Length: 64
Length: 192
Image 1: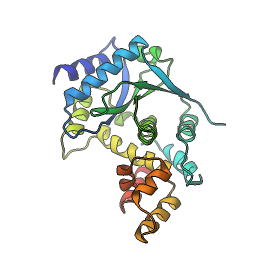
Image 2 (image 1 turned 90 degrees about the vertical axis):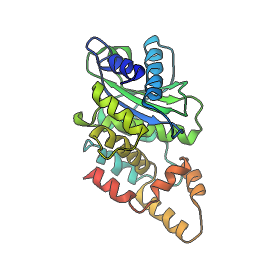
Image 3 (image 1 turned 135 degrees about the vertical axis):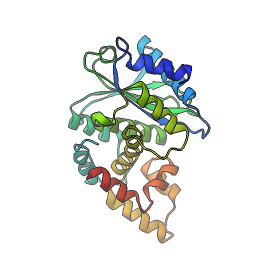
Image 4 (image 1 turned 90 degrees about the horizontal axis):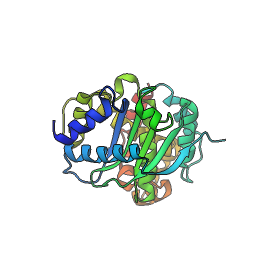
């Protein structure tokens, strides 16, 4: 397991960490991506979510 | 996949199409069926690597507290609208994941990441749901009667995939998937 994959796993699932119960992904356009590259993007997202550094696209609410 | 997906599927089958179906309509219905709000956020993801992701937390977890109790769908910033539409609805389909389909451990995450980057003969439930969610999203965006009509029109030479993609406001490469002969079988298996 590479460094980024290990870091993402610990942040997502370790006791006392985020406690995520499900993560799923939509890969990008490159055919040559690695697990480490995917994990690096996941780690960036986790950092920004934790820091509140994101813009809300929309909060989905029930349609009338 | 949760049997409640059938409720969403049946709802979408009754929608007129064309015109293209609103992602807000689909996402709103998912939330209503599953009784959950979803937070949608934009992030500077490298779209060569990742276009979007779905995250949900154990109850009372730090993730849940951090995000107001809501699952989160993250979309890459700056994607063309057709990609935004597909990625958002595909990711929200993971609200229908059953417990044994969720990626909830280091081993499952490692396997998921490896399966997305290299071919594998074995398909875990986690990996299977990644593919199923794409088919579910496409089935919601294109009710079966419209899909059959598009197939007829293409076979008759009256239209082409690019026009269908524009009408549905979906990426053309996924319209190709939508119009294949086995698409209906895959959706039937998901619904059964």
